Length: 88
Image (tube, rainbow, N blue to C red; front, side, top):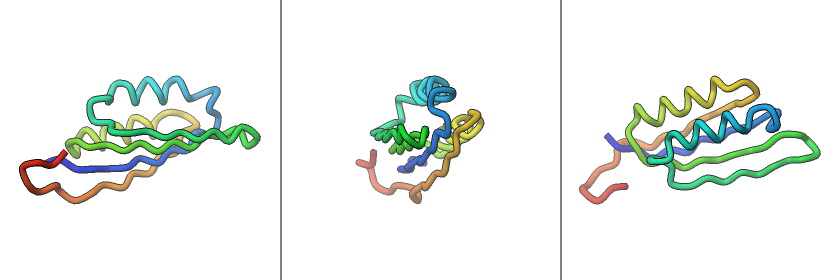
């Protein structure tokens, strides 16, 4: 059952955790539809939003892996089940 989701992430120390964060996202590139990252250089944080379209298990697995990276906080919003033949 396919869903659309958005992951919001705050990287508290990008210099420490950004490589692990990006590597994890890369391993889920098949379900990623878009990504936007905004650095807050003075505050030494980065905010990243990722839009996904995929199976619920994959979305949850990615969210869990990102949330287990030190200095990364994530929240995810997930749509209901997509209906119809021509969904994402």
